[in-house]
Image 1: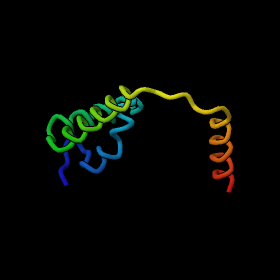
Image 2: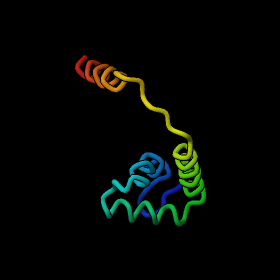
Image 3: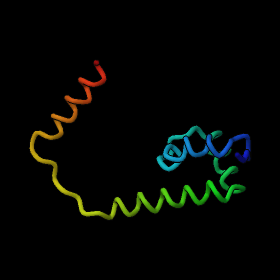
Image 4: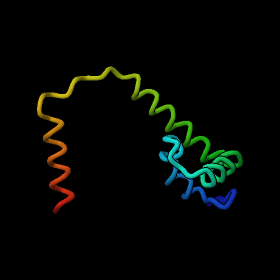
Length: 82
């Protein structure tokens, strides 16, 4: 496991989604970017995630059947309550 800018590769992998969503605090984002600048493996993983997201966004969307959203939200609520 490699460490750059006080973040390990595992730390970076756990935060890549937040990084792409621009949801990291500025200090964490800077350290993650410093790690990415020195770590080819993590940079490759980030690029693969970006490519996957881009391809998924390019897929044609379908309308959700009537009532499906409410059913899903109810199921999630019930699961969280359990």
